[in-house]
Image (cartoon, rainbow, N blue to C red):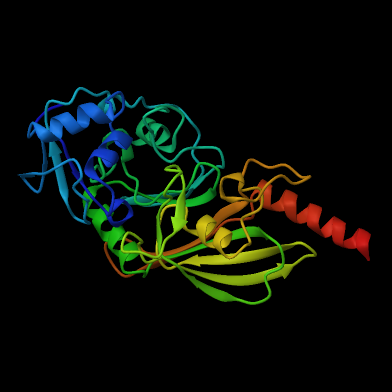
Amino acid sequence: MNDSTKIIIDYTDEGKRIDAYLSEILTDVSRSKIQSAIKKGNIFINNNTVKPSYTLKESDIISYTDIQSEIHNIPPQDIPLDIVYEDDNMLVVNKPSGMLTHPTTTEKENTLVNALKYKYGENLSDINGEFRRGILHRLDRNTSGLLMVAKNNDAHIFLAEQIKQKTAIRKYLAIARGVIEKDMILDYQIGRHKSQPQKMDVVFDEKGKPSITELKILENFADATFVELTLKTGRTHQIRVHLSHIGHPVYNDTLYGFGKMKIKTEEQVLQAYKLKFTKPFGDEIIELEIPMDEKLNKVLAYLKQNELKEK
């Protein structure tokens, strides 16, 4: 690593410990080695040394030296991209279910970032570091749908501000367990699960981050509900956590308590299907909508077939 390595923290990573955050993004570097580098003064926040327990804030600038890592060696890969919209400053891709948005400490290939690097090379924003080249917001591995990608840092800032100010509209389709009887606003703070670090949870203390999801019923079935969800915030696993909390987990979402069903899919039946934003750098409004994916169609067909059998 050289002295110029910098990462700007956005709202999606606010609240994480710096040692935990860096262990997520620096491949082949142990958390203990990261903690040691912090203590030695090789990692800075806003040009100041901090403790490993420092809690990240939005717009913090991390800079670091003397950490051996392969983070800059994320391989470009010729993976097909379903590009729904593109201009000189950005693009919107339809990410398939099963693909990671960006590399992790254990998986460095076959992610959206690997595909983006092959097609666009260095013509991607690097505000969030090399491992998240171009990435403004994320979708879970098994959630499909629309993702904005920035080709330069100015476009990244322009689009990220829309997400932060909630002027960018992101809508999802999901099938939830059980019958939801009315439209509602899910307003529950979200934080890291106390005993299962791979999960998030609804929390009621100062560690929770404000999280709001609007839920609209599209169709009810005997034991499931087809819903549209609008994100008002963008916390990790937000929709999955909120629906699980009210007793209606996303269909086949085993991490958040759905359990097993007769019809199998690649985990949660959840799709980011609609996106509205202002094009950089003006006032033109872009509205995009994609058809339902294979998982949604498969489960809806199953539910409708069962309804007919019962009549």
